[in-house]
Image 1 (cartoon, helix red, strand yellow):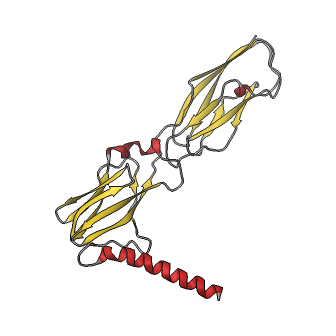
Image 2: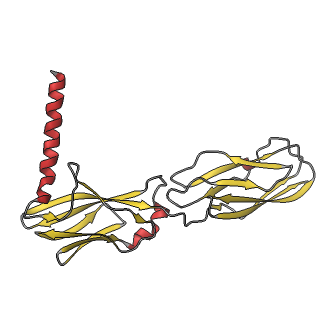
Image 3: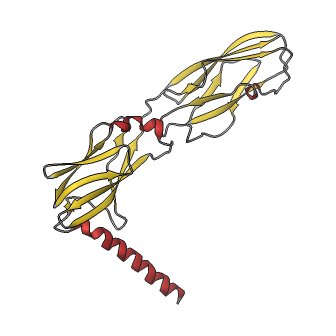
Length: 236
């Protein structure tokens, strides 16, 4: 009995969804070639993260006005018998503003004013994230100065943090290395922060450190792009 009730509810819900979006495809309000399915979502072909301009053209029928909602990056307009979906100026900032993910995409609701009412659907835009940004450290030079000797395994970054950032949306596998030396090692402190697009690192004393004044080079790489910083260590 419970299973029967559940099935009836599912059929009712799906039937309502189909009715809700069915109006988009009648003679009075149509977009050629659009198939949004029962959940009202049109999935466009992917565009690059530096794309500018048109992302999709639809041939319309019976539509008198169009606009997008809830999107800073896409807009829509009517041009003759076409509806044009294109990027906004804000799209150029997308790598700085979106959270990093393996499959970046943006969505907007496209609202249509038709001759006999209104309709809408979700426009989903996948993004091809190119590895076009160089990762960087939060400083060019890290200075650590101690008025006494430093014990083995002491974590220097408890005094001054080191982290690296890469604003690419999906290229987040950073590798940080330090030049060969007998004094310091560097290793990841935490996992990738997808909101800040950073990874923090620990700088650890390999052995007991006494009187010294040395500089070490560190490098961050995303396999294609690299940048450098230096660590100046003074133990008096």
